[in-house]
Image (cartoon, rainbow, N blue to C red; front, top):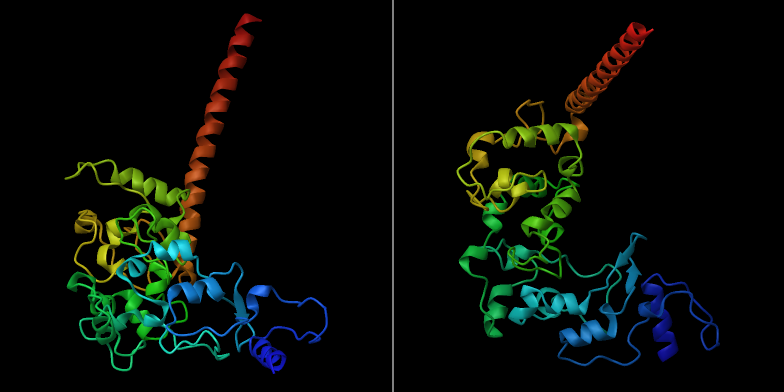
Length: 324
């Protein structure tokens, strides 16, 4: 019976079948095998991670045929703010049973279940705040209830419209390694924003772009209220502030947007922008302007070099001619 059960579970995970009862090695990594012994309640983090999800390379084939990475780094998770507060895997992944996972998986976790002043109806995990209170865990403080503000940002609106490229909370904060923004290891720490935001906004965080370099050079050419402010293409919230986060009036306290705010519009080419717009793929005019701008810059550099070369060559020829 155990061999049959193992075969059925392996088949449900999309793992190639092997001859049961033989010495032939399985074709899939051992991490894909279900627990050899039944996991009893309570389903703690240690059980979820040590038995399955903490194993390197742990994953499975989804019903769509796409491989799903299901590995969670236990050491990194233990340093997350959620683990520090005492949250268990099953607090977010309710009704999870390590002995049997449906092929379709469980409903996606919606952070708004905890991080909303009023969680949306039907959000998963269900009754999350009430369950945390019953476990003696304090709900997120008011300053961490950001969902309503986020819903008003360009990211939140895109998510509400089911845009395929719209990011959700975990795309920026990660799913299992959430840390405070002041933590240098946080995905949303100011030093890491270039990498985090650049996952989607590749064109906007290119530090070597000529247009961006010249724009930042211009930024350094006038007086500032606070010389400690940094002006870099990867300092995303310095200009975008709450529009890039959760709708706050200010995130970093920097005053750049007071003068340099560029509306977060989808179309159009605005010469006051310091980098190409997020919807650049739909803006051929913006890409063309960037190309012409770069061509003009390097053309001037090349022309200057050529003029200097010709002047030097002419001067050298004149001296030789006079000496002859």
